[in-house]
Image (cartoon, rainbow, N blue to C red; front, side, top):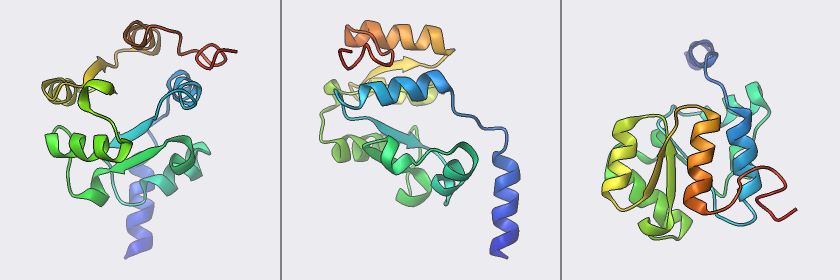
Length: 143
């Protein structure tokens, strides 16, 4: 039944975390750039994130693409094209950060700038180098 499935998904999802530095960087960049969350996930992930972490993906990000709702999954190039279309940007105007090498390679093959997530310090430093400015809260928006 639906409640049992929701409970199972909830228990399965307990290990997932949002890295506070990455969330802070995404928030800091929102005024200057369009920011998307592209995820291979399950139906209701947005509700689960709100319940567990207090984050509303629909307000934290300009675009939220959940594979369960669009019928595509990373590293399929079609999901990247869909996300770019929703953002209204060309591949060369986008930066994709992900921990999965296959996903990063797929995005790079489309002409998207990429950062493979290793740890917050390394990955955010690489993102700053790509953008040419800080992604720290307060600094990214010129404060």
